[in-house]
Image 1: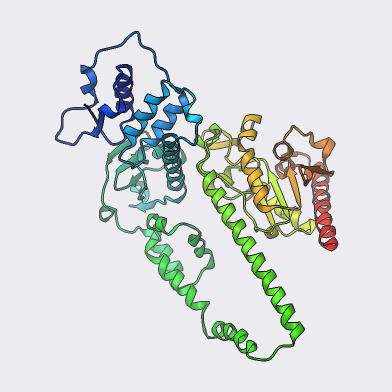
Image 2: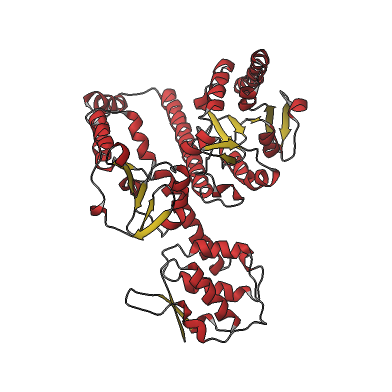
Length: 492
């Protein structure tokens, strides 16, 4: 039995070196025990040095396996080292093993990697810094409780995003610190060791506490398990309780009682049948809406861990589609921009504001439209602290098309409007010139599609007269969509 002792719980390089030497010496997975060195142990993965070198032996694995193993090792599964070595051992004779998604080992490792990716995305999205100290001596501190051992892997994102401020991210596993030049990692701490509330948080409390602000209830869309990572954690529950009290007063209670009173009165037979039919239709509609909501929520969660193209590495987060479940109109844009990447919502930047105005002038309520993008991650080129938009390429559009197709299947809109060339390529499955297809209704795989320009195109026009003309053409295109939906509604 070979006992391999790694330096720490995320020692990928130690595991990799040991695993390579073991497999080249034909050491079976059942003959290996993996463990992690404790503080009083002096041995490490170098204990495999007793195995003979095999300079003539050749065994190469794909970059896909290396990336998969590097990520899965961050999972808290105690059997991760053994599982990965077993997979490596089997890859010797089954080179396409990673494509066998029904294989138990492959499925488990992929599930572990997806869980780690989701945890990293949640850390990037939900972590909040507190200001400690004042002015020149200010330092920013955040507390986070990750599900997996992701701190060292996730920290570089914050160094890039908050490069001009010194910060510390404290977790029970490990702590990451940024001094403006380099990241350092120190042992984890207990939550009781986190510095107490800062002056900014105290201002926030004085401003909001005791007042009902519906916008604050957006936090309810975040899993409750992650409330503990927010600076406002201690007052979220009282705010929600206050809101519930305000929406369940005597007037609400009286209104809720009225239907019961009406049920006690006799009702004509035909009216009773009509009421029953309407109730059944309402229930069916509610059931269908819930199923669609569940489907979109599941897609959004799954897309958060998408690694089908390299864009996820530099983007803040996946920006998924949003809108009502029964939307008859779906708008598809190109990709999230800088503002959308930070906010996690589509079309909230300058192009989104222009789109809002155009929709209003065309007689379309944005609240009734499902809005998404062909590509779900922000592609950009860094220029100092500025991130310049970069057009997605065909490989990225193809890699992300599965999400559009699954959104389309869940929403089932009557009409899809493709905003720009990237959206048209994704929706129609081929490169589609805008100038030859603009304003035309196209039948594609049972769905009607209208092609027009992206609102960002209007923002880039330097001539004000040309911009005004193109903006009016854009509104006219949207009016075609509005008229088409009205005609469909009348026909129904």
